[in-house]
Image (cartoon, rainbow, N blue to C red; front, side, top):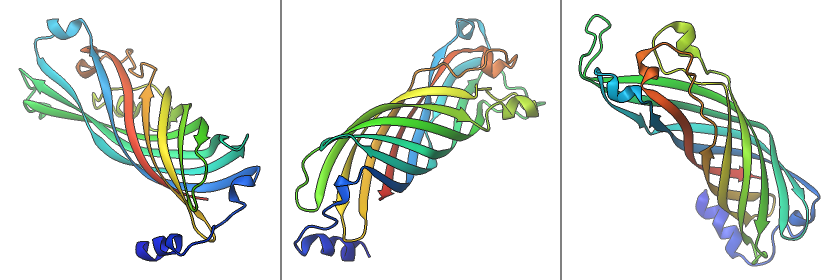
Length: 226
């Protein structure tokens, strides 16, 4: 199937010649993300004698989004996503000096944080000139996030790290348009940099008390069909 698609690009001629002239364009995007948290230790970390090391483990998740593209000029577009769902399962690894055997702790203890995030990105896109059935673009923007699954650990009283529901991030990406007769396929690589401290400091758990700040980080590869 991939060979058949790219054979259409090599046949010559311009596919979808009026595609970029449309004022509004719509698409569906699916992606795979790789994410983790950047951790800043609390001053209590030095005083707390039961935790040696805290690490955020890289995890893989899925993205599903609907795209709306507004053409501003020949080279600039404004993009938004009325629906953007991000599914993740991040994990924290603790190296403990004195594991609590009653609570079935081990020297290496993992605390998982599941996330189902509803995101609202807004992006400014700069595109190159079209070369036959190919175009490259760069984009920058930001997004507001609401985690539907945040505080699950707090509700279940399982001493997991408790995170806030709201976050906002900066993002940048590079992508490529491949024009086919009836659609445009766009692979894109994007990085996200969280600005907000998402740690809920009201939690009394020892896994939270040793951390002062948590910021989200992620990289996403996606395919969009317009």
